[in-house]
Image (cartoon, rainbow, N blue to C red):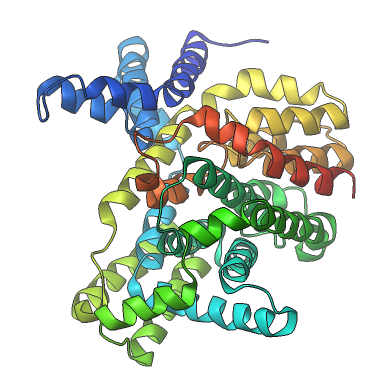
Length: 429
């Protein structure tokens, strides 16, 4: 492996950032030893914000980069990066977290859940959760994974009334895994597939027949197993979507159909132009104006939370190019099975879209190796927050359910079973 000094430093700083993510819970605990609002309390709280971790280390790395290579080279590198995805996730999170979009999603899920309940005579709470985790995740193949993650996480957040550490880790693990594989029905929604679809000529039919039906089975099995194993805990800690709707309707003004339609049109416009930064940001800015004149039907826009998620992803992108020196040779020298297993494991410490992108730069990969790489990348997308870009959005929405912050090791352990089901479906079926 050949590498430059700056590439080695980029990998070292990236490794330190990954280690840092596993320490955020402990750092938050340390912050409590200092008076509230003191300098050390504030600094440790910042260091304990998982969304800020990669941005902090990326900032430190760029300072070293400037010192070694000079300002001109640093700016040249910075302008070579593609930050479309962080900007897109910022826009889509803000739009999808608005009251009209969430209400429309609830109504759709309620209709499907009621239909299933009538046919199979299943309990409302368990049916609602099952439909949310299946339909919400698979919708990512059409409205993009970040949008699906945002809407699904908000619905789960509204249903979960009491905190249970074991339950919330199992729930968020299944959510992360399901969204990661749920976008695999089409070639334009899941970032790991999008990165390679054009170069490898993977069209809609190819993706659906090679990944889609297997992913749909895995999503369904994961949701079914979660609801079956935790049926008692869900009954004790959650309320149905019908109850959520009843509570909200009594406290909020009814949303006119026209307002909902306009919001859905803006959402559709941003999704359709999602690969063209100037286009979707223009639509988003116009949406902010519409949101201000429909304030009566809005909750506070989640600008801060969306910005933090974008910051998180931007930090990861900052390091991506410096991992090519060791990732590309590693991926190129593996057998299909080893490549699949390696992709699952590497996804835990490297964003799966970055992993497949680097894999696409390896010349001479066979068709079976290409499948192994992408299948492994999406199967491992729920192991950590950094494994799949939309995970950060889901965690941002559900973070208050984790007193003291999420513990990455607990998430990793909770994700092992749903990940194993995804591995089985994508490799064995």
